[in-house]
Length: 270
Image 1 (cartoon, rainbow, N blue to C red):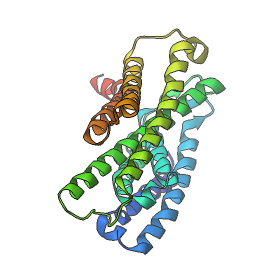
Image 2 (cartoon, one colour; image 1 turned 90 degrees about the vertical axis):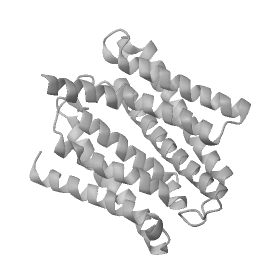
Image 3 (cartoon, rainbow, N blue to C red; image 1 turned 90 degrees about the horizontal axis):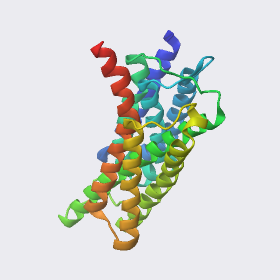
Image 4 (cartoon, helix red, strand yellow; image 1 turned 60 degrees about the horizontal axis):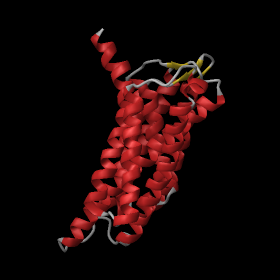
């Protein structure tokens, strides 16, 4: 990686970090801070996207190494949180998501590795990966929203003021939360179904019973059970938190965790 891309990655991380600081409770009370975050995040995401695409899309295929995959998912999570209006309505979401994105944006500089995806020129395989990464990003934002929502509920029950002033009503936040979960579940269903039933057409090999597939199906079952529980039993609060966090962790283990073990730990053992 040349000096200019490294410098630009540092700029992207700094933009995310500054936006995260503006989302902290004291800064978030300043209307000028909120206005700055609203243009700062898309600028950071756009620059992040350009740098990531230049690094991932290579003449030899898609370079989906651990560091690039982590950077991609984190950037998508920031995009989802901003485009859904969550950072504007609830700055604590930005304070939770953006610092992680800042660190992830630097990962390709700190941890240089290469893992070329040989099917990068196959449009269906590329679409499969893009849908999977989008699903991961949506569920990460949903997990962050659940944690913030639970904290707000706890403070309200304790008679304390919310950290971000007057947040939207809890019922509104819950509707946003389950819309995110529903959208993520649709994308995850497409990912799991295409991987299970069209593995040979997508990747040139039959379905394998590996960590990625097992954890992906387990996460799909968890989120499916959550949506059924919400529909039939009105699940909310801490119960929903447990299921969303559990499903998100399973998803991270399925792809990011699997790549970390295969590319980082295995290399270290050697």
